Image (cartoon, rainbow, N blue to C red; front, side, top):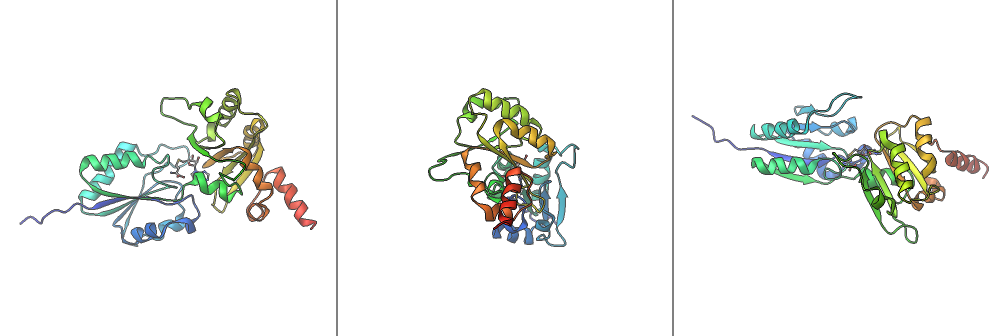
Length: 267
Ligand code: SAH
């Protein structure tokens, strides 16, 4: 006698930028009832604690310099798990649809006829600058923000366009920082434009470097900036010097911060 088969459902869930307190309520609720959790690197261990003890935790991220599981394999895994009748949480860093390939997973599920839902998350593109004391827009300073990636499959970023952004937030800039900053300057962005790198924004080990666009890549090299990190370019970066309470509550490495700290000590 065959039992009627009912497919499960896949939830493409944003886990936020790192700090487990920035997980959405809906994400926590779904984690608490999921049969399987398929997760990436960049997910805080505390976030995974919301999962039931009986849930299957499936890691598909890249460890160190290793290879990540191929996107097709992740898609196939989600489909297989759902076809077993399971409720699957596909947990992704930040927001699933911001450079997270969530759209590709949604398309694969759509094609396979699997029910799915997207649960937005707090993107690092906004949260990491905020945690570093940088509002991505600010009245009178920047009326728009451009989110872009330093890596594009088979295609160079449109540097001329990106150089014209009021605030530019560049994801995945890590390995190509020098190339990116030189390209922006070559495309017309002033070398003196304030810039910052936010490494592991909102995590316990967050670091922020601040320098002009022309110097930031060298500063990042000196400080051995690792992943994940974002580059922020634009006048809004200068606001950090006024948002002292935000800046001082975090570990700091920039000279400006050291200066601010020293100054605060004299007050
Ligand atoms: N979907 C994610 C982005 C995935 S792409 C989001 O919305 O945040 C991965 C890139 O995001 C990293 O290379 C880095 O540039 C950026 N990133 C993710 N988490 C970050 C963090 N906590 N601090 C700084 N950058 C981060």
